[in-house]
Length: 166
Image 1 (cartoon, rainbow, N blue to C red):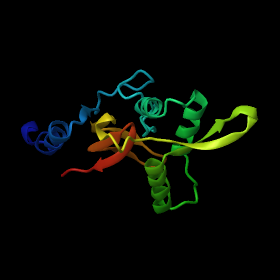
Image 2: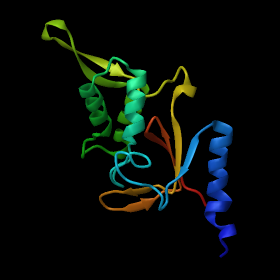
Image 3: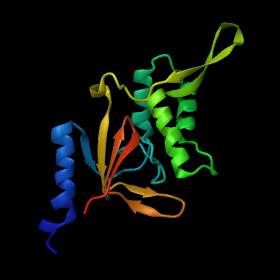
């Protein structure tokens, strides 16, 4: 089959162009071009990472200027954690609540007291101030499977859109 009629040219390019031209997303192609490492293409150190921590941490700092480095780590750990006994539906509901309502982090108060404060992950009031990234042909490795996705859409480094094209 000619490359001119490949899935990438006929479908993925069109979908990527739509995201870029109509919605203003940054669209990147990752297949065999992604450089792993903290200073790599997307800041991933391995194909096992799905949260783009570079964009995630930048968004947390921008949306929550009061956060310390330890609170930032706490928020990231909370978002990435899940109970091994939870169903996929339970995990999705929990992550949805965190994205919608913010991630609880511990705040030190004068006198040694602590309280919980919610850190925003997405600016819902000003959507244009969020970072939208669509990555075509992103490699993802899980415990059981290795995948190369057609398009994954990230908002502030959080994977929220998964598109399989045919």
